[in-house]
Amino acid sequence: MERETSTHAPSQDGADDVTVAASPEPGPQVVDAVAAAAPSPETKRARKAGSRSADKRSDASEPEAPIDAALVSNLEALIISLDRPVQPVRLAQGLGLLPMPEEDDQAPVEGPVAKAAIRQVERAIAALNEQYSATQRAFRIEHLAGGYRVMTLAAYAPILATFHKRQTSSKLSRAAVETLAIIAYKQPLTKAELEAIRGVSCGEVLKTLLEKRLVTVKGRAEELGRPLLYGTTTDFLKLFGLASIKDLPSPTELKLST
Image 1 (cartoon, rainbow, N blue to C red):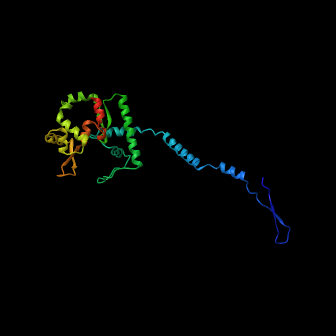
Image 2: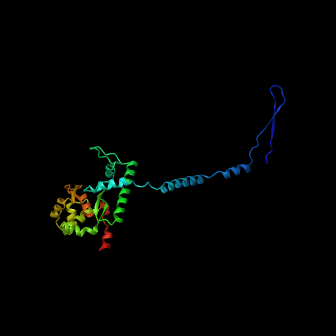
Image 3: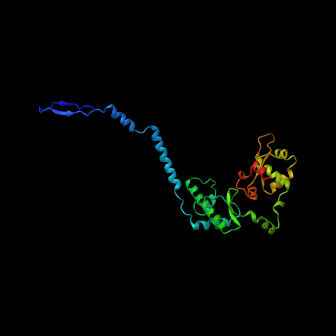
């Protein structure tokens, strides 16, 4: 234990000396105790990480607000009136969740406000599909070719084909289907590459697919003669009920299904 020391300071006016007590210096044991009590850098980092994790859990646990019933009804009326897939951001604009773009404005709509609006559209579509499923309706709102539209369920394809007096299989010949499949999986590719894979001339079949707007010219190859490059179209995605080319079954899945 440290002793307290005192010093005598003489007064300038000749008064009695004033005794001033000096503060005792902390001993080594006190210094060690303070150092031990201080959190280490690792502990500080761990506390910060734990705080951030807690904040994330708090945000994730917050429930979303109930979907507006009027918004759901308006979205249903909007989608039923469409004859082609429409992107969710366009649906959000049609519902007044986002401002309508100018006629010559082609810039993509991005940002947190756009994401929140698209989220409302997706939740409304999910609510409608739940209602359709619960009431055993023959249609659903499907994600198709980058947008949404109403489509009948596959189970009703035969009766629809009979009513419209056309069979789905008769739309494309076997050669056209094979050619279309090669283009879908290998695109973009040239006519020469296509014929090398099939082993036969594909001129007439390719012309038919172009007329049906299932195939289009994507550009030119960077090689001698700059031949045309072919790829599939949005109509191809609509015909086969695909949201994008990424939804095509993989070669492994095709082998397992055969």
